[in-house]
Length: 454
Image (cartoon, rainbow, N blue to C red; front, side):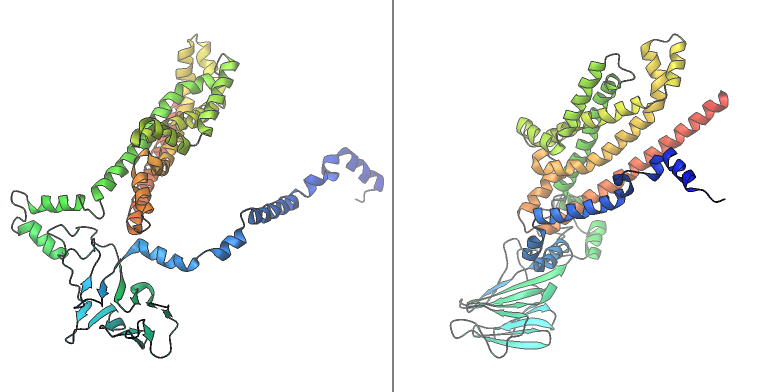
């Protein structure tokens, strides 16, 4: 059927919201895309991101990441002494009497240090050093008051006024001056993670340790080798397993205690804050603004405040989580109460029950699953948050993590604690999800039973 012009105009006049929509309604997707692009351009300018990207030292990234999963040994050889001998840092991973097989004393008094087997090495005496890498052997003379590379300089060697630096990739580097040779040799893994250099089990293979624990003579009179091994692991001076795990437990307890106390306080306050339950509108508004204040002050700020009040430790952390959760859980609880179905409450009220019984039988069965679910989620979230606030002195593994990061040379320990934190968050996330699923299934079965009985 063909429509006339008048009929079309009549339809347009009857439905102006369809045919004559405002400009912003017709083009809002385009406006949204344009606004997003403009905002991103503004952010690029405001944070000077192009300049930051240009000035960043991206070449340091591989070295930084390698420090998380490896360790290095740094022997130094003084060439201005009567006899050349290796010197290791005081707290070397090799222990008090290091004698690694990759440091070789040659028969003529020179030394060969194998950085990566024979493919990458340096051989030197007091007058000359020969650096081998990438299929090249580069001689360096040490007799003219400064190191001089003989022949062409490859791109993996940098020559300074008083030092020659040979970069050998991940495995390490060699630094040569006229009076010393410094070596940095890198190994994958974590040195002395199980036993430190003070332990009688240090340097022994897993088979030897097992044999000593099962049938070996007592290494410390009056103490079994099993107890001694456990003590040595727990009190490892380099990795500090005992202290790290104790601080991790503090973090878990902080999160649980703060969330539990916050939920206990927020539970009754939420009933007085819910508009459909409290008898006073003024009280409802006052409590809601109180919840807003408590959660608007970040947990980190509360932690700083309580650290000054109580001193560093887990008490400050628990108090910070407690105060934050009063606001967060109070708001979520009250909103859940305001969205309930009033029919069960009206039914209980019609029986002549008092106000307390009305809340118990008409409101709680509907909101308790929501309360528990929200509390479990906050508990899981606060386990992560407790790590952050620990960095400002509120105790737990966060404080230990910050102490390790401040040295800027202990990134393997940092990675160890990060992995532990991730493991704890993963475990608690699964526990929380399991409890919520069980709760949902139980509630569903309960409702089906009630429906069947009704």
